[in-house]
Every structure is written in structure tokens, then in C-alpha cells.
Image (cartoon, one colour):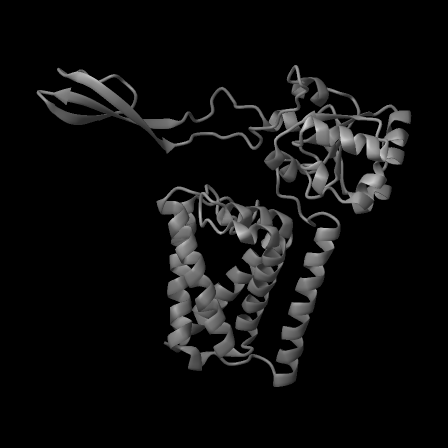
Length: 364
């Protein structure tokens, strides 16, 4: 039992630290995922949505800290009880999401590793077993350093986690795992290769045969049945190849201008997923920045999901001299974790990205 507890302790502790750090690298992204869970389609606790970011930071800091606590043997009872309560909650959440097919990606490892709902649930079940081993073998969890050193490490893990979370919120994620990371070519990320794996679909056909409804399952072909057709249901068995970017569009009121702008030699996209929620201090910086960029030959555009009236109001209030184009809110949130955020492209390749706090650091 002693050795099993130690193996469980090491594996669980490392996994919690890695999982927590990845989310702590992008707490804003994790808060968006929490908003999905809080929404009416999943848990229907929408009153928590305004607090998603705060909850996100608390959860991921706690996750990292608990992993460190477990590894160094700090306060074993508090640590193991906390781990058990946390994993029971997340096991329920991932099962609910998987069974009812509510959230396609749990966000357990941020954008670094995408897991299907059932993969997420399986991972949580394994962790639950490991934590139960720790729970029943808690007497074998001992500090690996002296009391003072253990306390200092525990305190430092908490302080550093808080500092790192605050730092990336005020700037951008230290590591960008998304398809819009610096160096990525956006048009290439949107292409589906000719030899890409095709989706695998399953069709359930219903026919009325001799007064009784019967079902026939095929992979797409129409079944040969001596009966009256009633209906068909389609189920995706394998989604096949999905390009890293599949829903980016830049639209005016009249046309789709995505290809036009992504082919520009020098393009700056200023993103505001919702202009009414944009940080006023950041928006105030945009006029001078856009004028400087235009003087250096850049095409400057804004991307927002807001309505025409709200965009016109912001342009007038801050005297902005660039046009806003329509883009999906979720896509804009993915491009840059800031509101407003800035992304600089050359022929569709991301050259620079910045939070509005770091606008002055961009090289034009």
C-alpha cells in the first residue's frame, strides 16, 4: 500500500501541476470555457457567468497549489480532502457534459491538448481512483522536507501562481497554443488537404414495414426495404480531419472579405469581441496607434461581433479612423486574449500580437 500511495501521489501531483499551469497560462480562455458550462445549455447557472474570470483564477491557482502541496507533503489531510472534492465535482461535470453531449472540449488542458468529453470523463475517473488510494493511505503521505522548508515552498507556490495568473491577464499568455500564434499562417490553417480523413457518419433509417416501424442502420447508402419511408437520423462516428481554423470570417454588410484581407502585405487587425465591454484605457490608445500604422503602409481594420450602432458609437467617441468588420465573438476571443487586442499579419502570417497594455512594444 505504501508504494502504491507514493506512485499515486507523484502521478496525481504532477498531473495537477501541469493541468493547472496550462490553464493558469490562459485564465481568460478557461473562463470562456466556464461560461459554456454555466450557460443554459449545460448547468443553467447563468448568474455565475459575470464571475467566471474570478472563479477561473481561483480554480486554476488552487489546482496548481494542491499539486505542489501533494508532492511536498504539505498538510496531507487538507490537500487530499480538497483533491477529492475537486475531482468528484469535475467527474460529475465531465460525465454530464459527455452523456448529454453539451461541451465538445472540457478545457482540462486548455488549448494545449484537446480531449473529447468521454476522454475527459475517463481521465477524471482514473484520477478519482488515484485520489481514493491517497485518501485511504493518507498516513503514508509525509513531508519530504523540514517543516519550515515545506511551508516556505507551499507559500511560494501560492504567491508565484497568483503573480503568474495576474501577469498573463495583464499581457498575453506566455505560451500560445492556439492556431493564431505568432508564426502561424492563417490561410494555411484553414485548408482541408485533399487526402484528409473524411467524416464517418452513421444513418439510422426508419421504415414502416407491415404496419410496424423498423430501423435500419447504414453508412450512408439508402437501404433496400419493402416498406414506407418514415425518416432518417444521422450520427457522427468520426469527425475526420478538422482544420485548426474553421470559422474565421471577416465580413462587411455586403460581402465576405476574409481572403482579401488575409492576402494583404501588411495588415493590422484590432480586435474587440464586444465594443461595449472593451477596456476604455485600451481604446483610447488606438487612434494614435492606427494613425502611426497607416503612415507606415499598414492596412488597419477592426474586428467585432457588435452591432453597427455600437461600433459607430465607439468610433465617434474615440475618434477612430479605421473601419470595423463583422467577425464571430468566439473567434475574436480565440485570436487575442484581450479586449482590445492587436494582431499584425503579413500575407496572412501572424508576425506580432499584443494586449492593449503592450501596444507601445509593437514594432511597426
